[in-house]
Length: 219
Ligand SMILES: C[S@@+](CC[C@H](N)C(=O)[O-])C[C@H]1O[C@@H](n2cnc3c(N)ncnc32)[C@H](O)[C@@H]1O
Image 1 (tube, rainbow, N blue to C red):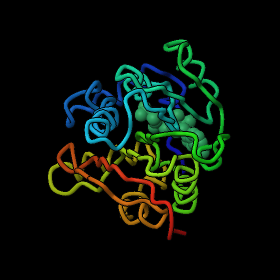
Image 2 (tube, protein in one colour):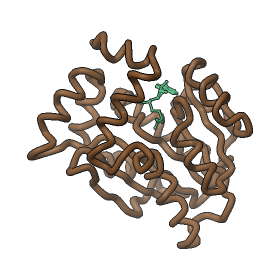
Image 3 (cartoon, protein in one colour):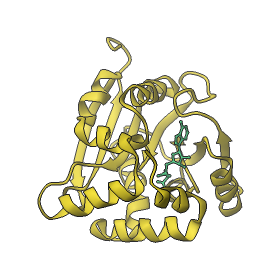
Image 4 (tube, helix red, strand yellow):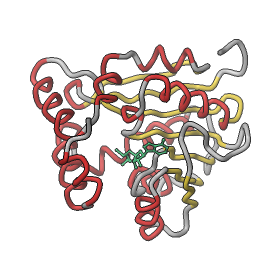
């Protein structure tokens, strides 16, 4: 069931931004939150995993915040989202980037198109089956040895458990609960990725994972 607050937040940008700002406090603010994926992809360049100016698909890009953070690091960014309104907003903010309407489960790109894929704060919106389809699609559109960076919710314990439960109740659907119950690292490996690094942030409420596309022996 979708809460009315969630519907309102998706309709009114100021509310969405306010909720994001409050949620981002534990990670050091909105700028830091938006930069988490770009940060690790920039480090992947340093480690030789991808080249400077690499092509990056920002899957479920929304209004473009995390995609714009990628572009500011010199990546060649394509944003994809299912919501035309979000894409219009993104295009107004960064007309120089490519914004594509489509489904994350079946993105309209040939196999091996991108050096990297980012999924920021979106995988929890899918059922486990859809999530698997999204990860398999990421594997398909990545070049051999391409990398995937995921930033998303993590099941908090201790002090963040209650705020996270309240947040999910007010602003998420039941897919977020399913996501929190699953192990994303295992799902990445099932979809043909090798987990390179993972980190829990925001006092346990957020996770960031970097995985490399494996070429054979998956699925
Ligand atoms: C919480 S927003 C995250 C937006 C952005 N990645 C960020 O970090 O701010 C989730 C986004 O996923 C998009 N989305 C949900 N289901 C989708 C699907 N099946 N295919 C593509 N985008 C989808 C929504 O339209 C929304 O823009």
